[in-house]
Length: 117
Length: 114
Figure (cartoon, each protein chain N blue to C red):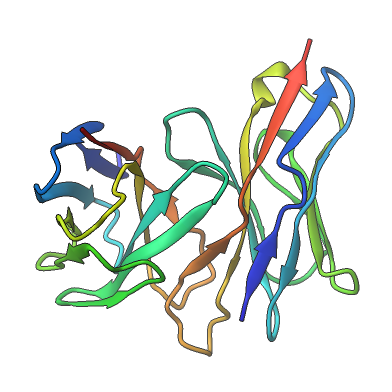
């Protein structure tokens, strides 16, 4: 069964410092991986995705993520954190097209990012 | 503007009542999804529909029902059989279930049982 783990409930960083939000996954076949951000009482906003190709994926708002197949990880990163980055971040994996093609996403439990001035 | 709308934003239900959450999209997407969000548990899939007039149960379908009579609409009914319905409910859609595109999410409905 496919699964996603976000090992940290909360990540605290100072504004201007680099940030990393961790994600590991378990899938059969090639993974399709996504990062979403959620602000309080709002829906999820798409940040970036890995489908194939370059292991370093660049996304919205200066975020990037590195796909590491050997470590089955897809960590979210940003070189310089902003206070406005404070939010709840979700990593997700999709069932691979060619299997059941349902488009379903399996989410990690989420990581709260707190950026302090 | 294209997007997904959910209504109402806040909903209060008494014990034993059924309530229906609305989800509408004007993105011309074929596939739609309902997720439930509880603190510390991420999002869990309730139901999904890959095409009009067809839908499948997700991981936590008990106590919920859906319909997909129109491409644009995918309402979710929370029945009295759902013992712990207080949660944040999110609707999402994607152009084709088999595509590599990301899902778009609506703004959510917060349901509280009184």
